[in-house]
Image (tube, rainbow, N blue to C red; front, side, top):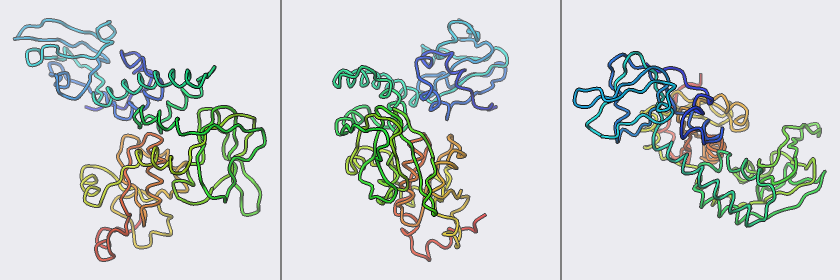
Length: 358
């Protein structure tokens, strides 16, 4: 029986999970499950090649070989801090002594997290040395953002190589609403305020951004103008990434596009459609079971999406769904974009696929 997902603090009690920062543990939590096993039930996930890593949460496990119990592990003992494995594959089996709860994690995902974290620490030290940084905490925070976590460390290194440092003063406008988007910015030092201008020309503050955060990607994703302004609250330093470099090093690797055939296969396997058009753009209906979250509302309402689920974002042309996919993947969601959108099919092909909007 599957129990509710765990809290991060529980993962921190196991080795090597305790070496990971909170952001990495949150990423793993998307797929971690707790399984309750009945007395005498064999845990197949402990076997070599199962693709799963198992930790003992409560109860006692027995290790059997050739009909004889050769060891036992109880929750809380030193042995239970480590993954439960059968070192002699095929000869040993792990059995629940009574009712047992175990944590199961995808081994491939865990290996990737551990490898990336070790590489990122090396990269942080390397970059801090090259740029003679006296304080690299901003860099550490930036590298722990999901937007970087999904890129190979070597790719991140090239991205930082292409960034240009820009010194800014308090009160300086970095980008203005309505201007053509030509770059995004990463805050190395200082505090920036995001503002949006209403129809009455008054400005409304949306957020304060600190060192280790970034802004300006929205306009690049939509190949258009800025939808907000950013003004420096304090003096500081920014890293500027140009439009072409952004497309090559960030947008391209982060946005996975799927055609209709692949998308339908994914939906058949449990993925869900995500319609990012405005509600009034859906008069003929939406794809079956689709959630309608307009792109302009995605940063707020997107937090209501299930991080353990897989989504396929779509719009009419594929432009907004590409932007939505980038924004959601940057926050750790599992999302692909429908290539060319609904217009990839003609009206006769599309009509049977649509259902009335709920």
